Length: 146
Image (cartoon, rainbow, N blue to C red; front, side):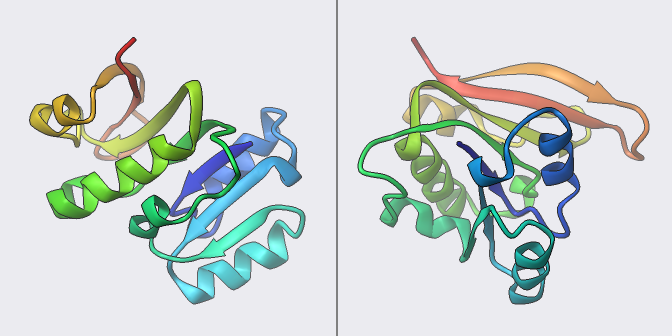
């Protein structure tokens, strides 16, 4: 399964489907009730949770970590460090070994402070960028340090 944080109207969701992810393998975490309802209509086979991603650390999605990857476009630079910590803890509690979070962020700077990454034993690799956005967007892969 693939976990998506803050899918909104579903642009990343559609991209995941076009890349071969099965709709029933999608788990979408959306806090906005209107967007969650829209996602339920657009992607009826996906598992959609209307909740704040902060709650992931208290929610065991499965009996064991089975999520292969997580995708996020959340604006972490605008989210408090405490909430960011809670979200990352929740994501990595549900990722299986070798799984990673792919974070899409505006600009070229990683949205996570090194001290936070160190605290969670995570490493960041820039894996892509697009100049089609203004400002340009960068994609980071966040994974546990091996």
